[in-house]
Amino acid sequence: MADAKIIDGKAFAAGLRARVADGVAALKASHGVTPGLAVVLVGEDPASQVYVKSKERALVELGMNSFDHHEAADMAEADLLALIDRLNADPAVHGILVQLPLPKHIDTQKILARIAPEKDADGFHVVNAGLLATGQPGAIVPCTPLGSLLLIRDTLGHDLKGKRALVLGRSNIVGKPMAHLLLQADCTVTLAHSRTVDLAEECRRADILVAAVGRPEMVRGDWIKPGATVIDVGINRVPAADPAAGPGKTRLVGDVAFAEAVKVAGAITPVPGGVGPMTIACLMLNTLAAACRAAG
Ligand code: GUN
Image (cartoon, rainbow, N blue to C red):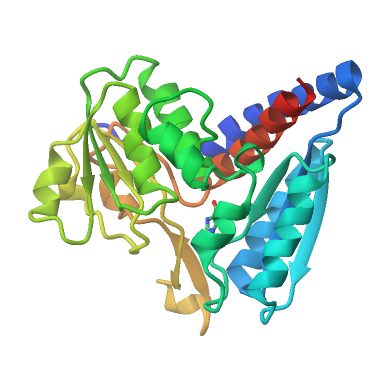
């Protein structure tokens, strides 16, 4: 069998970003409104710093305003709530993103619940999660599952009716919203996780496999149904395989053992260059959409 088609998330995301940039320019011209996203980072987590920087860079590139709030790791929860209240009340801020994870002394759910649902660019607020779960219109959809769905549709076409989809990982950020999106697309959805019995066997039944567990290369080639579409959400940093790379050198791998999976799947996202760029492009899209709704 021929190797899988490699799904080029980087190229798809570039196209989406260009369309968002056009939308930003049109909103400015028609309503004099520049979409703005407030990005809140509490503490010094190195991975979060990298993510936040690329989000801020993308905003500026697409002509949007980036309001950056980088706060000390020991910030009091009450002060973070007060910051969110100010951002909720600021008409120049159309979207608010609080980078996760937050330091342990801060109650994440309490913070997410304080964000005005219409400014919840991440789609993590219970109101948006509830709208999505109940299939109602108007939900702001979390960026990684939304980006994954766009790649699945680009690969398989719009009609996903009756396909067997397996989502591996039950997080609020990826797994659960991904399962709801696929259900809405009329897939038959299995939401699998660390306690699932016969996980490999469950995976082997899936026409669409979305891996979002954060376990490096957990999904092996023989877990995949021949011809399946594989979306790898994992971004795991592991020691470099090649000893010549030198001590301390690392590389990025997904939740899927790519070299094995590419021989079996019909199409597969690489890591990096698959889902990652789509997450940021969808955040830009959610921010633009929030600004359009606010402008009326
Ligand atoms: N941490 C890991 N992924 C995400 C994300 O998509 N949004 C936010 N706010 N934090 C994250």
